[in-house]
Image 1 (tube, rainbow, N blue to C red):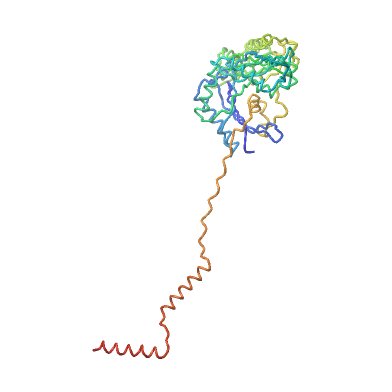
Image 2 (cartoon, rainbow, N blue to C red):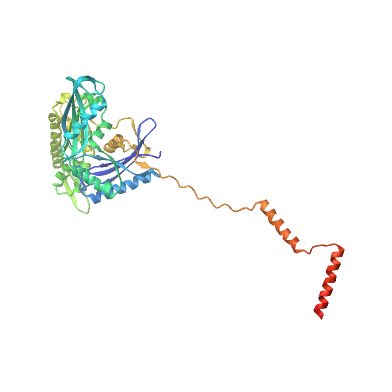
Length: 443
């Protein structure tokens, strides 16, 4: 394989670089995943430290190219998300003089009109169709349907300009790497985790991350709500720090012993952290702190169902959870307990996505990055052309005809240097002339 798709996910806990390709059957194959720690340099999806993020992405690019060699990365897709991203309902309509067949050009014009309605002070990331009303009839797809009036409903996905501006500073200006396109991370994740049937029946996707929790609600195969809450797993870590622990100790304790539900104890546990200090923690107190913050986050997640205009009974396919913070012990159980009547499951990638052997075991830990790769279309690498080897100079060979000519010439010169032979009378006169000449010289 010589050409790959490449994408960068800017998470609040880590930056992920991912590369892959589509095989002859159109199936996505993940070839390489690399990541760098992004703690404190990306806040709730927005780049805070341009220099640090640039350095992380540069290292990721080098590591990916080492694994994809000899291919070189010439551009990349970038995922965008966080509290800056929001979805707004927009409606555009059009009338025809007579009953007409609605064409793709009509639909595209409605979409362009929706984009023009948005203020220029914000960046438009995507315009997502949520359905059409044609002559009073609800239609999921408009192309090919006949009618005299059409009303198009969209979700306009927007973000504050600083979100893309800081990404451009890191990747385009510093790294000199073109961006092939921006992809809304929440939508891309839904594409690789939720099935069409789940979106048709109605479901909620909860991405519980380090600093944010993103909620996406679908019904009738259309996006109903997209909201990012400014709270995540790191809020729980900060609460644990109130037990006289530093950030690293609190994070370790949360992972090792934190439980969002179902653990009560009066016993103490002694845990040794960095240095020689012993820290004694009451597990009952720890559970109380973790559970209180988890319930607050879950209450905000539940509120999004009401904001969508739906009820729990409308989400027949239940709730799907992804994100690293969701690994907290008991968090899934607590979510199911609070969302009465909804079944909750942990998200898994769709079956038509494969990975090379090295990445197969960890691919489900990078669903958001895989979603970006799945949504991307263009190849992002080029394989340099191999240089042609320099041919050694051919030795000069003298042809036989030239040799013969030279020999003949030499022989001719030798022949010319020999005295010419004459008859007897010529030789006698020559000898007589030399005698007379010698006598004159003697006189």
